[in-house]
Image (tube, rainbow over all chains, first blue to last red):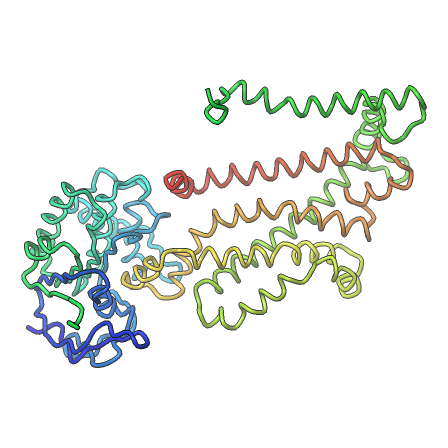
Length: 219
Length: 274
């Protein structure tokens, strides 16, 4: 089943051509890794999928419809840094999405609804291995724990697509291996379609079902 | 050991901190004694007992004319003006700062005018305030607001712009709209910044309060100081200045403690970066 369709997409900043003539389709449930040297447009492409940037030419379709021009809950994201909110606890960060949806004008849930959201958040945090840190603030977490939190925060929205922008770039090699295992497990369990930007070719080859190589035009 | 590596222990640090105060006090007493020995009626550097008498008279004796305790009455009037002014400034700073920082359209509309207004010297428009708002409480509070709000507004707007864009994108991927962003991401992260901005604005707020009271008032700490200046009453002026300093110090201290109490995540983050 075709989820994403990329037709003749190009992107320029002034005279600077970043991407040209991208054409491909991605089926639901694929794990796409985007590799390439820095400055070759892989992050720009991720931002276009996210809705943070728009293509200069061509179009990106999701389920046959043009992608909205701003980010939305059907596309979750984990950045290399600053993905989680520093003023909320681990639990608060994961509960935020559902609270925005059901919490009314003040975007806060109370009583039975809150308990429901809390249970859901706790089970997700258990799945990413953070059940021991529910009431800690992000500043008290290691880099790896912060990324686990960011993944849980994104997955609670049950997005169609999960976008990962060099999510493990700042982590130690040992912790990276754990994170790879975690992401693969969650991908299999949820069936979410993943796009992951990395500059580590080995990581891209070993994780993805599909590898996309970005490189600057010859000459 | 090199001087840069020499650190005082906790008790030594406290003791060192007291030394300048003691030196100042001793300098004052010896100079005061010298002048009083020459001329017992000298008013410039009154002795400590004279000042204690003055405090006794102003703080603990009913004024014969009004039946009030002047120091407390002055303090209450001044603090009321100062706190109302700062509260209005803080509310404006939050409201306009959040709108400026989060909405590009509003920033284009209101950014230039806020920048222009913040360049107006508040004292230069004090006469206008007296003409428009009269000589009552309102014009004094408005002066404090005009003197402190623009800087705080611009500080708050800049703090919003300094927040990582990732957070703004993230909130949208969690299904949030512009209102959600302001309420659940921007506002809570601005509150500790607001307390910090308030601390920095205390000095300016006192300056404008005393200026307004000196020019047109019938009570207040600034009014009293400028009133008794006519009689060279240093025995009143000096305790009043010390009292104002103590008040300002404790306002600053309580804002700092309040911030630590209310926003532990913020201070932990700051320590993490330091």
